[in-house]
Length: 257
Image (cartoon, rainbow, N blue to C red; front, side, top):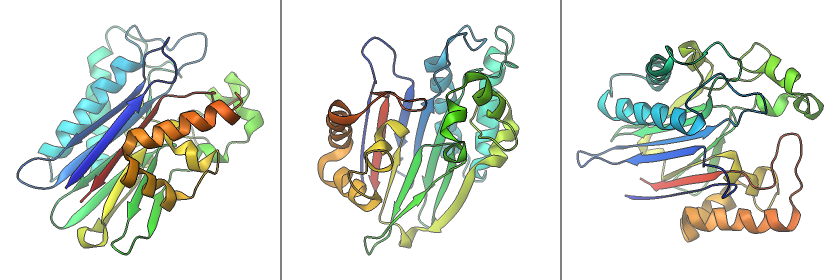
């Protein structure tokens, strides 16, 4: 088994709000967790701790439960991790705030029989078959929001964790039911990769290659290589927009099973 991961901040002036972990116990199997913390706009999020604190708490709980509770499906694990994280700051922070700290989520767990997955919001999961074909598992609800809506903080807030909008892991455990989940026989998966949108933009924003080519870069150059390619393209072509920053926090993890 080979696991390679990397994360890089979008700016040296701000903390990295992504969170990545990988666990491969000697007993076999493994877990990958990738979170992309949502940067709140001006006006705050009602929390005294901040997004990096939130993603570390949530990511740590997701990693621990995914490895220690093979009997629990991933959506239940996400619900429990969200609940436990909310309890950790319920007494000090306003968890009813629409921008209370939140994150996109990718979790992958495998054993000798199956590869399970969960995707919530706009991070990307790639599954590669033994023959080389690549399937992208996406939660595309945010992509369906018109760009002009995203230019308005108030309009975006009205769609955040709301029917007809998009969903992220925040303080409500019931959001786990909104995640894209599934499982694939282990024999049909050769490799997996998870990318925050700061890394997946190499394909879905800049069109430098399709998902199979993106996975090939990860396999050959590693996660740092893909992030380096993203930064090079950003420097050449990126322009800030309502949704995309010139440089975003970027994280990637690649595992050959």
